[in-house]
Image (cartoon, rainbow, N blue to C red):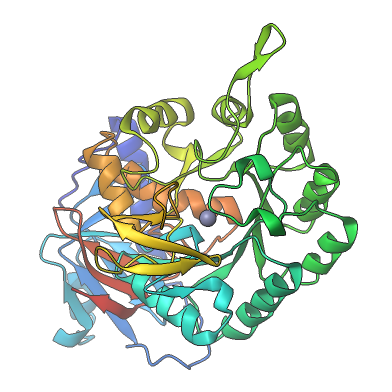
Amino acid sequence: MAFLPLQSKNVSDAENARCELLAESQRLFRLRPHSRGGRINHTNEMIFTNARLIFPDGIRDGFEVVVEHGKITAIRPPAPRLRQAGKRVRDNEVVDLNGNYLAPGFIDLHVHGARHRDTMEGSVEAFRAICDFHASGGTTSLLLTTATAPLDEIVKVLQAVRDSRTANTSIAGVHLEGPFISKAKAGAQRAEFIQNPSPTAVRQLLEHADVLKRVTIAPELPGALEAIHAFYVHGISVSGGHSDAWDKEAIAAFDRGMRSATHTFNCMSSARRRGVYRVAGLLEFALSEPDISCELIADSHHVSNTLMKTLYHAKGAQGICLVTDATAGAGLPEGSQFALFGKDCIVKNGVCLLADRSALAGSAACMIDLVRTMVLEVNVPLYEAIGMATENPARAIGLEPKGRLTVGADADLVVLSPQIEVVQTFAAGREVWSN
Ligand SMILES: [Zn+2]
């Protein structure tokens, strides 16, 4: 059996992983995959062969991945055993990946839109177009992200997402970005709709706690600490961002359940003087606290390479979640104009800008672009960059059956070329995009 832990940290890690994999392969004959209800016409069994598998701790050759009814049911050495047992494996059930990489499907916690469509439209068609575009970048689960707007408009989006989720399984829920943010750090968000998190507003949102998975909030706002606690106890991931907080306010938010930072470095306070003393802001708090996971827009525009390296060395591979923060300009040709939160924007040099060029307006990226940036410009091993796009975001929002190549996980998969480009994307074992 070929077993090549090419990028594993050390021999004992690799040996542990090998034992895990063999144990998983032995479970094959015990595991009975459960059906997702029969709406999707899955092939009964698919076997992905001849791939380099990307795990959280390394890349391994010499295994195949078996998928049944939308779930991974085995990861094992190529199995002559099936044929010996008299079971026929038809060619069209075997997917030869020609030595390409196979990774878990990407999970993007921060997506506003793509191709002229925006989450705030609140329509099934818009949601579908956004998910389809991001599938081309390897994303199989995403949080549709709202903009700062009147609360009633945001609630309408939450309702629309609830109505769409059964038909569109790529939608993992909603990320609320505003209106509970700082006017001093609004970025491209519309300042006139910013408000404090009143108990009434929080109650109204918590009626949609089944779809609301993440909230970006500025900890220093009046009422923010109570709101953070309320979101936290409802299982909603709380992320500090668009914030002018001092570290003391960030620490108080952490004590109430804040465990993430939104698009780290962008639209957040950093160290500055208070009187004669230099005091940390939200940025330094996020860098220094191991239990805070940091969003990073690694699109080569929002954050410089030095800053990305700083983040990587401060947080480690497990402390970063790559996010696109993609807007309606993603997927549009150079020079295209589009609207963002009611503001005119333009796609210029591969980035989205306000039409007056005064600020960035989200990104034009998809997730594979960020993975490639981390590998090529930040010198992160590929398997760690993949972890930042899969396992880490799954952990941040409790999306447990996803984000790893492991037995029992959803068969959300992405095939990558050696040049780190997406070749094919599968959701629940079904091809949803191919190059
Ligand atoms: Zn955003």
